[in-house]
Each structure stands twice: as structure tokens, then as C-alpha cells.
Amino acid sequence: MLRIASRRLNNIQTLTKSSAFNIKQARSLSLLEYQSKELLRDCGVSVQNFAIVDDLNKANSALEKLHADEYVIKAQVLAGGRGKGWFDNGFKGGVHLTKDRKAVIDVVKNMLGHRLFTKQTSKDGILVQKIMIAESVNIERETYICILMDRQHNGPVLIASPAGGMDIETVAEKNPELIKTIPLDIYYGIDDSIAKEVSTFLGIVEPTVQEKAIYELKNLWKLFIDIDALQVEINPLVVTTDKQVIAVDAKISFDDNAQFRQQDLFALDDDNEKDPREVAASRFNLNYIGMDGNIGCLVNGAGLAMATMDIIKLNGGSPANFLDVGGSVKEDQVYEAFKILSEDPKVKVILVNVFGGIVNCAIIAKGIIAAYHNLRLKIPLVVRLEGTNVTEAKRLLAESDLSILTANDLDEAAKKAVCSVKA
Image 1 (cartoon, helix red, strand yellow):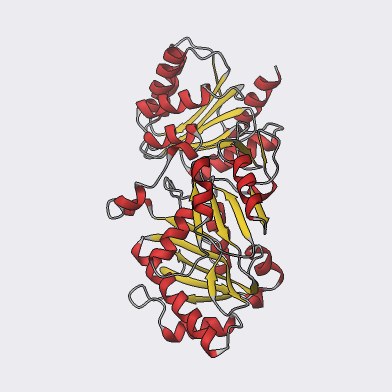
Image 2 (cartoon, rainbow, N blue to C red; image 1 turned 60 degrees about the vertical axis):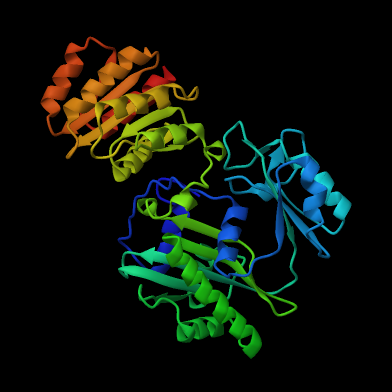
């Protein structure tokens, strides 16, 4: 999940053939898998039976609540690629299947309290504080369901595919006939007629099973509305060999603007599961995502930030982050942005690229000067400012007597940043 604007959400939205969809959200709320399943269950959506272990002494009692031929054990962290991850104790895999109840306890012991590393975690990994043990299900059919807000349709749409359990973007590219998109009326949502049409498209036609699928689809809509979701994606929604319809995996994205209505839901958010830099940035209304490069970027506007990273790459450099300070940035926010960047040991140079429209370039300049002094920056700083009050901003920087490299355009700024790293 990217948190400035969920890349997966944007990719799925392309399935609706929207060429102009570009939504920017802070995405401050991210839930663990078991929390999403609890939300589904509370709205009447069928999920696997599961138990949560946060203490080794409680592992046996948790397992006693479950009865199945096979169990799935999952480390609960906010990172993808768990199945191919590894732990600091050498144990491999954050997702395990076993039919041996004793083996379940051994797996839990090897996961709980240890740091999990995946392709999506930082170099420090994530401390696993909760484990989900779930009853495995025997799958007869896998399908895909997603309800999301789409600007092209001015409201919610339902996306369905009989090719569940697969990467939906790949399905859309290679087999577009397997994707069905239905615009939904925000007031009526998914009724019996729409649910029956979708379940038939999914290949769920046996009357008793289709009735269950209709029930699940209507409850998914109820969840979508009740929690002010931007997206509820079920991949896969399965039909089991005993003819049950179950949501096996779920990804839910929330509308942060609805926090005042969803206070209990947002209270579930746990900053311990997040990158500390992202947490610090969110406190000051900054959008930050850490990356693997060594050129720190401070930019106003998501589009300009993406362009800045592209130009850095084109000039042979590598961005260390995405940091968007927004269009109404204040001097204290500039300071906090610099603080986040300067505390990253990977960052060897900081590139500031600001186009002043709403934002005043002089405010940025004052923030840069204050941050340079207060943080005692030891790394090169490249600044490109353009737009509102830029003349005053350049005067402030020139009179500061600080070792700041200035640039007249983005390409020049990127070249200077790359050269500073290599120097």
C-alpha cells in the first residue's frame, strides 16, 4: 500500500477507463489484516474463523477456539510480501500453512516478538506484535470484487472478475473481457438485481450458492457506506467445496476527511506499525514516503514531486524520498520537513524544488534559512524556487551567506544535486 495516494487504488481505478483520475490523499489510517476482517465480520460479511495471538502464553488457548483440517498463520504487519519475508532469527516466511496443530505453536514462537523483513519494509524490518491464526478453507472457485469511489463516474463503482486470486491489473491487461464495471447509485448501492447480475458474471449460478453471494455483495456495500471507505477490495471472494461464500482477503482504504464521523475506527490506528518518518510527517500535514536513494527531495505538489524524482533519475541520481509539503506550507512545516530529511543517514544531499502558486517562495526561503541554522546541516543543499515572490526569496537566500547551491530550473537543480552526491 503507497500512502500519499495508494498506487494500488490508482491502478485499480484505471480499470474503469478513467484517464484523468488523480486523487491525492494522506492515507493516515492503515489497518492490519485481522482488523479489516473484523470490520467485514461486523457488517455480516463471511470470513474465515480466526484468533489473534499477542502473547506466547495465550497461543494454546487461541488455537483451542479453532477447529479445521488445516491452519494458516500470518504475521500481522503493514507490509506486503510477507510470504517471502524472513525474520531476524533466521525463520523464513511471514505466512505459513500447516495441518499439524503443534506446528502452529512452533510457527507462532518463531514469529512473535521478532522483526520481519520484506521487500516493502525498511532495512530495520517490522517488529511482529500480533499473529493471526485462521482456519484454512477448501476453495472451489476464486473471484474478485472491488467497490471504490471513481471520479469519472462521480461516485462509487463495482468492479468484478471471475479471475480471483490473481493480480487484477494483469487480468485487465490480458483478458479485459473478464472485468465487469458497474456504476452504483450512492443512495441505492447494490440491490438484489445488481448482486444477481454480478454473481452470474462471476460464475456463481447454483441457486443456493448464488443467494449467499447476493447476501455477501449487499453486505459489502453496507460496509463500504458505514465506514466511509474509498475502496473495499476482496481478492479472493471464494466459493468453498461445502458451498459457502467467504471473503478470504481484504484491502480497505479510508476517507481521511471522514475521521470526525469515524472516530472509533481511526482510534484503531497504530503508529508503531508505521515508518516513524511518515508518522512525524503526518503530524505536520506533510506527505512523506521513504525510498532507497540518497537525494532528499522537498517539493510542493504531488505532480511536481513525481517530476522531480523522474528528473533526478534521468540525470543518474536516485531519490531518497517523496516529500510533498503542499500548497499552503508554513515556515515551521519547512523546518520539520528538513528535520525528517536530515535525520535520514542515506540522504547525502537535499534538493528543494518549489513552484510558488498559492505558496509564497519567501516563506520557503525563510524556512530553509531557519532549518539550515537550527539543524546545522552538514550536507549539500540545492534550491530551485520559482513563482510568487521569488525575487524576494532569492534575495533572502543570497544575503544569508549560507552554502546553498541555487538553480534556475529543475534540470539544472537535479544535475547539481547528482554532482554533489558524486563529489
